[in-house]
Length: 319
Picture 1: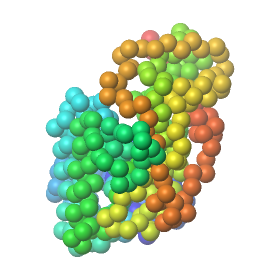
Picture 2: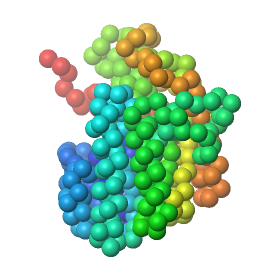
Picture 3: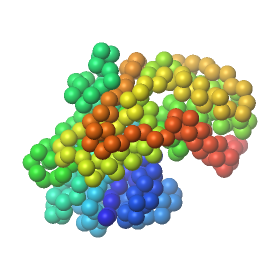
Picture 4: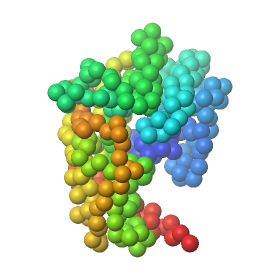
């Protein structure tokens, strides 16, 4: 089986490569700017910007995949507020070019289009945990782009052109998580404090937000199951079903810190559009595949912090 992973250089992409290679799949990556991270994956990585339709078509023709895991996206809600046009272009037109490339090459791969819990947006607390039939009330251009992307995939599935399955994936984390996400920022700051590279003060935003966290390695396992068993056109929440206060996640990291750390709120890290609680219901995914999260939070947090300790130790200190 040949699996094409778009956005392979990203956080989830590397873990997806590990997952599929462990199952003896032949994995090909697609990325707009393959760098050292892509080369370190040990797979063929094709270069194509999803906004370049001919380049995408050529890459799909070369890969000739049986499965496509579509991860490539502008994935920052905050950045989408600064560049809504770029976010919508990358996420919606990029997927359009990929789906058209599949159709134009006469291929019939199963395609998993990865969406986001951000699509639910302004959540009614009475509806928690969120099922897939909850209203979509987006609060950012990023969320709008993921809703449009999801409906584009649905249209191709309903018309029988592409066997596209959709997800709404909730918060996921683990080793290699980008520092633009709160828990990874916490871990990096702790690692830098331990290494003596910053004062023993950890800057945080809103610690009262409740989110549904799953280990990224459990998430890619869910993606593998959905690529095989997911119903074309259907959408599945990928989440743990349990809410966790961000402050409690920080406490778990602080318990692993090797030096005392003071926590201070940084107003610049507060998001005005923060939703108090976002928790999903994974019942549809569970009923279809039997999937359950297997990696405990303590392991996820430890592995995240150890990843940052290693990065800090191998990165030269600023002059």
